Length: 602
Image 1 (cartoon, rainbow, N blue to C red):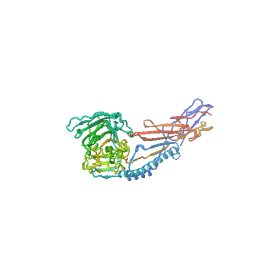
Image 2: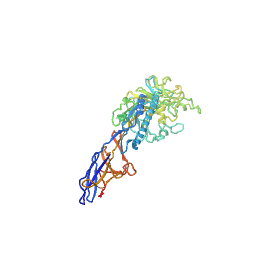
Image 3: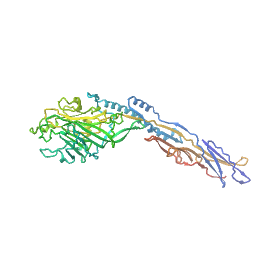
Image 4: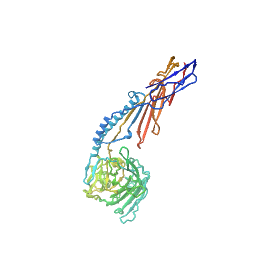
């Protein structure tokens, strides 16, 4: 579009002056004002008062392939969600045509690659879903004790225990005998002081206790306090220990923009009550052995992780959590959400057992040397509906009453080491990954907020002399697989071609009769005036208008093709995040008006 401005110079009686009679022929919506100079020159001023009309085109990339992949993934049972916050909304203004806009082509190429990546993610999610379902079905079965046994779970562990061991709860356990009188510990000691451990009567050296962490724990025991209770007074007694702020729990806290369950962390106090102690049967008459076979003992640590050691006892453990600083019990029986929601698992730890190997081969005169390995450890609960046991684990449900040994479980059905050699992996007693996941049992789908677990050991050979020493590690490790979820988003691109308002100046020199007195003056493409109107965005997201003007040919090295690219995404709270770039403004000035230069009067 071009606007043309014509001026007429008038002459009279040899007297030269500039007349106010100026005729303007202007096309378009631009208003032209004229001013006269007093030094025989003429200057014209061009003002911008309204924007020329422009046309906006939809230049979005086709989403046909993406739409098909979304449909296929949903059909394959993949959790597909639209993430509108990731959408790119791109608005481009340019002085050239959409077909020749480099910025538009670049944006289209970027969105095309984005769509290809999303299609790949959706296709991969279908394969991941197949693997996920296969994992959930591996070793899945219904056990005789009414539990569903699975090898892995699709739900995360909501409970996180404090494994730093820097925070010890040194409050003494609350212990009462069967007569409800206070039960005082036989000994209180610090794990780091090895001199306080049981002493080998033959060598005089301290015996390394299973509660002593090894390097696999990556834990230092210097601050652990241990309370030890011994003797027949344990039968019928109850010992309760609480650990304040010992764990955090994830609880549901609404949903995010993708429909995922949002969680928040809360501190909880952990409580365990040890009760129903049962002296194991066996050959406990010989007390000359350094192991003190017939003496039942309970040791409880100030640290929640590696916290309990029992000798010659079967027992029950009831555990519960309260919100820190209150007596309100956490309702873990109701934490049975779907994937991603909070769910509590209690990992009882490994159940290590080894075959009885007979009297010591090196010194047959001391048969007690091999008593330690004649045992089968077990665990059971009736307050959970699911048992999670790793696919490669040797742990399984078995009848432990067939040996004739005492147990504290109904019908003798418990989870124990069922391999023929009863061999457990090396390092199981100090590596939580092995201890809890590979050779342990996790119980979940609790039916009580104070579930009870039954622990113990039975002799594999009841006629053999044996002793029993078992400890448990509380662990938050869990064998689980995450159900695949995949998100998609749609992008939009619009392109607005900004018209260039071009104004050309022409001056005609005529007399009062209109006769030509001199050649007309007219600007050419290199010195006419050009205007554009750009829509920009402020920091607060509101739009405003800018006027730009130049002289010269558009698209040359000296004068660019202005282009404004605005992209809108959303932050985590759904608020618009706007980025804007402007290029090609070389040779242009941001002005609301412009003037032709003065022309010497001919």
